[in-house]
Length: 210
Image (cartoon, rainbow, N blue to C red; front, side, top):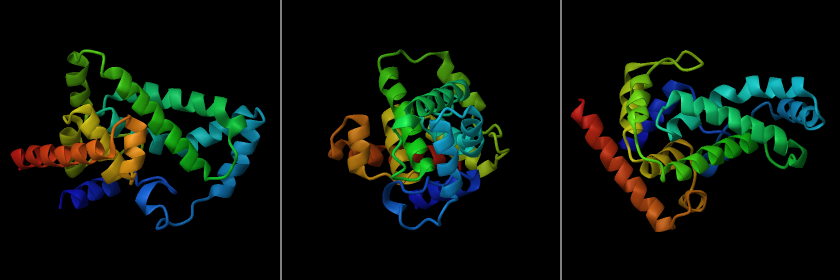
């Protein structure tokens, strides 16, 4: 099944959904949240070295989901990751420690990428989109690159932005359609339709390269 294939791709890439998000929130093993909380408390008090430690702990995973959402445009993904961490630093004083720090940061980063996607709808597509495809499959910050992930990454990168976002959020990140609809400003039915469209297009692209 397509969903299983995408899941295999996520496992190979080493970027499973963040703890506490979406449908699989209750099935993941515990993460070292105490360390994150201690660092976050220090960072919220202005300790930049603690925030740097949080960046090192979470940057790779954050980059993974942002890159998927923006179609593997490397420069754009890196800019958005930096923007997400700037927003996190600014928002830390208001962080209530009611959820895992990784979950909070992950959601903030996804929302940062989604805001950029919404803004990009008014921008014309250009050569940058083709340049982004040339970068797909290059080793990520953790050094991961396989033939399977390369084919899937290229296929996902060619999907229309909103369909790609729904596919990534639902099949990879484990969000519910209600969450996706709210984040993307669409009806729940539209989220389901976009997922169906994305899976169909992805299947066609993969079969075309078989």
